[in-house]
Length: 418
Image 1 (spheres, rainbow, N blue to C red):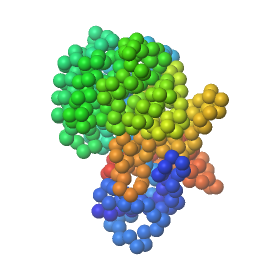
Image 2: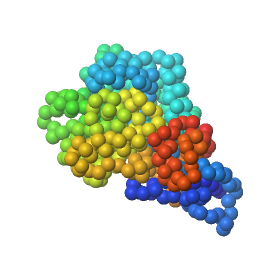
Image 3: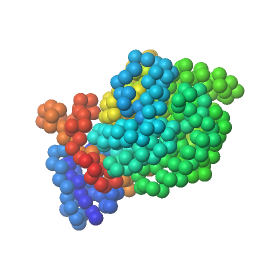
Image 4: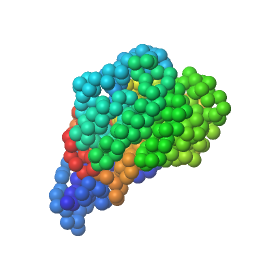
């Protein structure tokens, strides 16, 4: 079926500028974009969906979200990373051995992601196999796309939240087999928590599973200076934190590395060579006093960058909010580095939260030909006078002061789900 969606269309083919069609049409066939055009006089469409003066933008992509930390939103954010993990994160994640509790929380997580316009998300679960499967089911039920990972951790973890190496690998493979072909848009992902909580044997085993089943990988890197020093103590013979992952073949074109605040130039070069994705999580990095990722440096060195909310270290589920924070963080970094590496502009931040992160899912995050039609319909009537404002200004205003109430409809792969 060929549909035309009419409205004010904005997207970013590249990070350099918006592509804008005022009162244009997105032509969609069976969930895939065929073209964007000003007129449809010569196109024989089956249906025109007219959104009038609304904004039509690609759905938001979240490359880093801890689903079991959702109940901790806004809690413990006066601490640094490692004490916060001990005092808040690990005790909360331990509760997900209880499936009733997991269902209560994960049902809200799934709805909240949808409400905030997140159409694709990369999720950490806890180490519990059963609740991880439940999370995948609930995400599928609301209709958004996701990679969901059972967390793996077999050392340097509290006795109430740790697994043996053998159990970790067995349960991970079990959930892979059960879910790799179960759903169209929800898939498993290999998830070593981070180097300090994973033995060499576990990382080696996870790497083998990733290769065996052709799966993506997610983990953390260089979020906090104490963490970086800890990794040096654990692997004194490795060149760097990134090299530890590389030594176990965990750096691939299907790997997401979250945070990337304190990487060396050599690590950034390695990440570029390995074609990995970096998930920039400015809210979390502010909240836990971790620092600011030099996002421009990563982009200029050719590293693929997307955005992450990092709930619950990040206190907002909205990727639009993360876009504005990414711009602000880049300005502070620009000043800190004596005006080296210019700040992000709105188009660049929008690109990171749509097409930049969307590449991890394939042709997602833009309205170019062949891309899956993930879209948000934005009603910005409540955000101020529109007369005399450009469409880019209206979108910028939504990014900074809008919220879920301005998102009227959500489409994922052509399906209207809100």
